[in-house]
Image 1 (cartoon, helix red, strand yellow):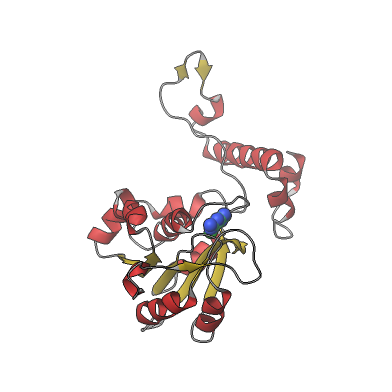
Image 2 (cartoon, helix red, strand yellow):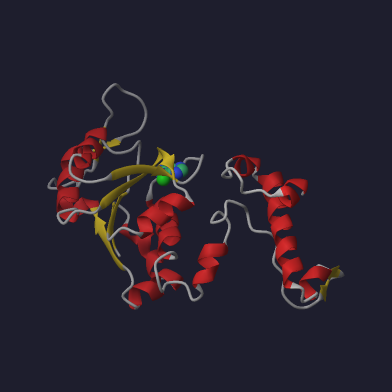
Length: 239
Ligand code: 6GU
């Protein structure tokens, strides 16, 4: 998969080359290019923003800079992702869609956002998503890109050591994962639940599902309501 990021803070994206993602890049599973939006400016001040039409606080990023930048970076197509708190929610389902793409391009806005005509114009040529990573406001899209790329990259074949962990984690089954334990058996007076040391795998699976159901019902009742019809059996409903 190829990923391009256009931003006025290229150094903000350096963590993409660390840890799991860095290893995926080194192994040729992922190609990442970060571009400085100011490379597309022509004036001595390298200005990328201007006052909003209609008034109000903040600045809006200029279409005459973003247009040519995206023309160049998207010359061979791709799917454009614009992080914004006004976007559709980024979910595990959208991460799976992105993981199936050959080329993703991220356009990072700062200030009050990018002139909407840039998005409208791009949408005439390529798929475009305005995406939000949650109900809070960040200063810019850069940290959202780090989040989105990490969620997508771990789904690419060969990136995770053990592919089962990508299938079993929270959200893949529509429930939050329950608690995990390792040695020692007792730590600071707290014991590992007896069932996990029983060796009875049917019982362990049942216990883990109960824990996931209980935790999800408590922390995210909206996820229980969103489960597809028929995903809870009689035992589940009793938890
Ligand atoms: Cl994707 N961008 C910005 N700037 N703020 C956000 C966000 C994205 N998602 C939540 N808040």
